[in-house]
Image (cartoon, rainbow, N blue to C red; front, side, top):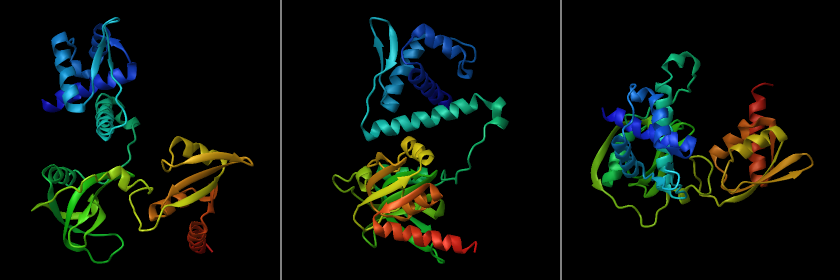
Length: 298
């Protein structure tokens, strides 16, 4: 019952986002085409109840143009809360679309995602209550795992379809990152904590690509990129600092960020389509990585 109600909220938001402005009559026509309607129209009273609930749940305002009597979503951008609401709506709208397309199941190919369903709700609950979490951790880079890790969970982040929690390691007094799929025996601890005043998760990762961090300072990074690869970088920038200029038939991309493992892996994945021009440190690291890879085939 609850799931069906939430699906109705998402349907209405997604419909208005896709079509723009709609009269109640047109909304009702589209509603009848949805499996959620079960062939029954959407009464005005129900519509306004959905509208009020959507504002409360998602922070999305559905307003009415009194001149045209059309409903539309009032745009509110720039806040972290709005970004989260949009992400939730997008995710649930996709889920609803897939549910409506069960007859096409063999023609919709999805990418497997390591499950974090068992851990994410616990961590979110701990964050709501400002409580520490305790768990055992099995890092890929260490042969022996660590039991009894205690952290103050500051925020969670998704990267390449994997969830991570970032927080203060109580014993080391350092902010560290942990992948949820490598956790075991997760529990909420009795110890409470207070979020540092003014702490901003977006600012914490402002100088990084991905989920890994470093103690080094941000560097000016310059890449020479062949034309086809440049199109991908334009569509999905590596970093918010990305700038591009054309030079001799290629694109020169400039960034201001730290050199990290995730950045190296991303650049290596582009193969011969990019060349690191500077800094020399990153260029040398990339050359060494490529030589070791080539050595496997010699």
